[in-house]
Amino acid sequence: MSCCDRSNSSQLTFMLTGIPGLEAAHVWLSIPFTCIYVVALAGNCTILFVIWTEPSLHEPMYQFLSMLAITDLGLSLSTMPTVMGIFWANHREIGLDACFTQGYFVHSFSFMESSVLLAMAFDRYVAICYPLRYSSILTSARIAKIGLAVVCRCLLAVLPTLFLLRRLTFCRSRVLSHSYCLHQDMIKHVCADITFNSRYGLAIVVLIVVLDPLLIFVSYLLIAKAVVSIASPSERLKALNNCLSHILAVLVLYIPMVGLSVVHRFGKHISPLVHILMANIYLLVPPVLNPIIYSIKTKQIRRGVLRVLTPRRIFSPWHHGS
Image (cartoon, rainbow, N blue to C red; front, side, top):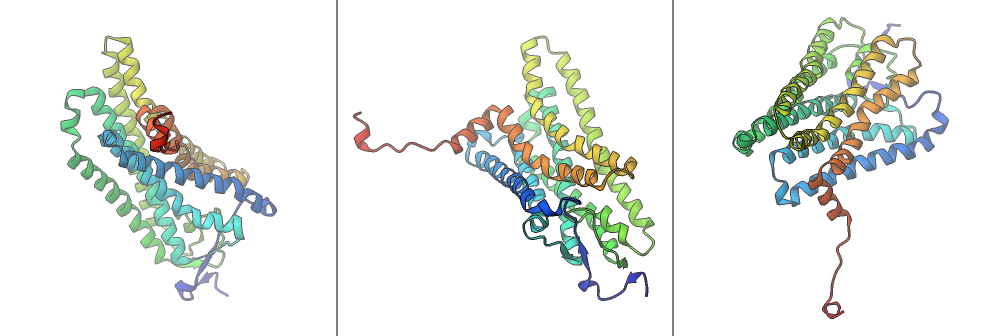
């Protein structure tokens, strides 16, 4: 018997993995996972609704924030079907085409999150270093072009590597390590030469996962240089406070990303549970925390969220005299 499955590729399936060792508790674990998705979806939808309905928030900073919220929604919706299918119904099987589709969107939205944070860093740089030219530099047309560039950069970057992987032959053992499909997980089950795929994947990681935080770091060096030159301590504090929400969002994304990379690189003998928990934190936590961070740290967003959450009092004519 061949070690590879050369049957009709449309009939091939992968087996997803929940949390190893805790299969009996998956029903109970579905409760916190459901709460995570509900908070992520409700929080980002609320952010989008507040920005859309409040004319005073139609500014570059909040337009970039709406891009971040859309990206977080896409990331949550990409992983939710298989994750909740495993924990709710123990449905672990996924078809080859469905797996590639999910992997495409998971990687695309993950890279898009990094790119949007880079665009937001540029927004903060312009706002602090060139405040008088802020509106003329970040026009609506330019913001739309940045958003289009972010989308094209991420969607087109991921497509070739998955397209090439789709043409390869997979071995019979196709049990994936996570509750969703990832390129680096699927490629382990290929019975063919994957040199080109690995090199292309590494190039994408360098161009996005490495380059984006590096450029964000450079932008904050320039911001720090501009803030130091401000004479008034209160103005310095105000300038730094305007960046705090973005800094926290960057840390929420990149700390789990770095942790996951370290675990994959040096943690070959670590329990698979650690790998799975790190991967879930990397993909599930940012969409939950980003709306909370911006709702707490940004006064305009906080007011808008309170306006949405606070029920409006309906006054009738009889109440006017009381």
